[in-house]
Length: 87
Image 1 (cartoon, rainbow, N blue to C red):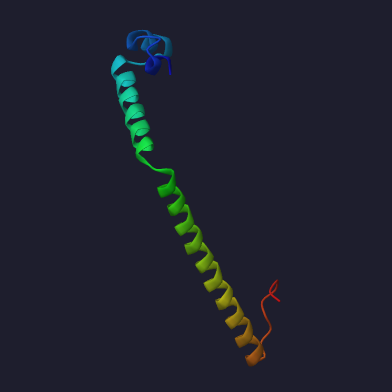
Image 2 (image 1 turned 120 degrees about the vertical axis):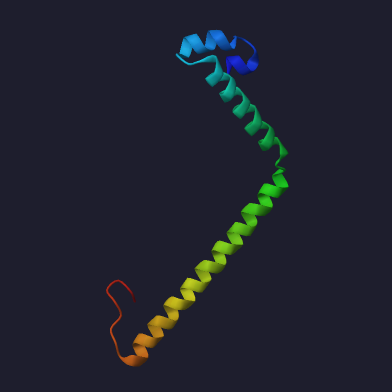
C-alpha cells in the first residue's frame, strides 16, 4: 500500500519484500485496474443482480419442494414406504 500511496519507491519495496521491481509494477497495475473496475459498478446494479439471484434461487427452492411433494404423493399412492428421514 505504501507503493500505491507514493510513500516508497518500487525499488525499496522490492528489496523489502524480496520481489523484483517488475513484479511490483505488475501488481500495482493489476491493483489499480481492479480498483478502477470496482468503481464502475453502481450499487443499484449490484443490488439488482443480488435481487435477480435471490429470485432465481427462491424459484429453484419452490421447484424442488414441489418435486418432493409429488414424489411423496406417488409413494403413498403406490403404497411404498418413504425413504428414511422423509416424512
